Length: 241
Ligand code: SF4
Ligand code: FES
Picture 1 (cartoon, rainbow, N blue to C red):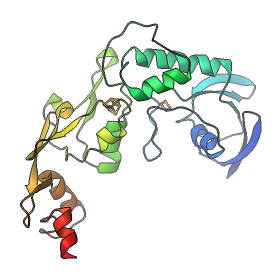
Picture 2 (picture 1 turned 45 degrees about the horizontal axis):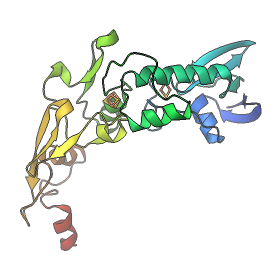
Picture 3 (picture 1 turned 120 degrees about the vertical axis):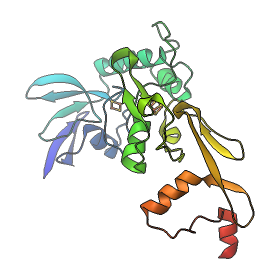
Picture 4 (picture 1 turned 60 degrees about the vertical axis):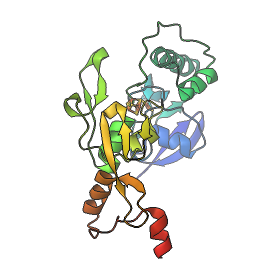
């Protein structure tokens, strides 16, 4: 069923259940986000996507990434209140992580040179993108949220080596603050943040180490591929074709 809403004074039709963020972006209206990814369940953690909604005569400030549209509403994405609230969100996030290029770029767009809050440095802003991509897309469930309040962290279960981590790097790819660094030393792939060290598999043809053995076994099992499917590195496989 279609629902008619107004975004910044313009009437648009959207499918019932569409989020405000999706509706806005589909109609060329930009809303900044940090914890949102279109392939993942919205989580509503960063609060940067705030907008004002007028419903039944009441005006409220709400996150747009996890607000499904079910009835006609008016949405305003660029009011004074929206801008000052997003600015405050960015100042708080900057006080946690002032080294992230992405955060600094967003801060500059909101006229922030330096956070007015005291710096409590942590490179993770708890957006949860790494945990969701690992669970929802990769299916490895290697990391999880732990503890509450100011002690909240994303960690491997029991804070030990993330034994279910396959070393795919999806978490590092989606992380907005570059908090997850991946290194390779020729024999191993190392993800310090998850205390994970993965041995690389050796190509049966050229003898080069090419991908984490654990990751290849995970994919082979998941897609029921033949045992020898990943015996060769990409180059040797291409030569055989
Ligand atoms: S490590 Fe990165 S992706 Fe994961 S919660 Fe922290 S900021 Fe987000
Ligand atoms: S993008 Fe909506 S709360 Fe983070």
